[in-house]
Image 1: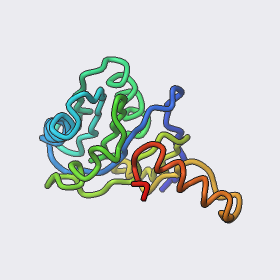
Image 2: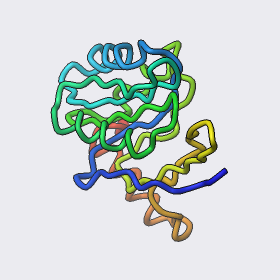
Image 3: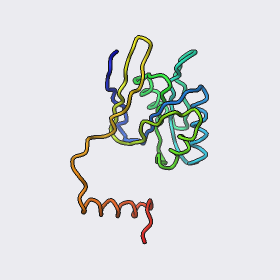
Length: 162
């Protein structure tokens, strides 16, 4: 077995979600969930099928994001893995809709950070073992940083000001 770290290409820093799912209808169901939760979303999704013709199945409404998802899915090439790139929405807007799909078994990350996926390769194929999302922490949050976090979340409307 060989273990490798594969860099996800995302030069523009789009938000992306990587997960595992288990059925041929995954691309269509994810597309439906995205459009129902955030109708203005632009997305590109690729799903690595693990049996039958073992194709990379894709859905999307943005050519750039669709091509980006296909390119990265080909690099990762781990069965039953999906990669979703989005703009005009944030994962917080739709992540629960994805988690509630019956065929989605795992969400590895939802991020816009630099990302590496850890992949094991055997004689049978590839498996996604996990992700390296962003960078390691550089220290503990102090009271000044805590206040900045509180202010930021209220400024962007994710927390209420009392």
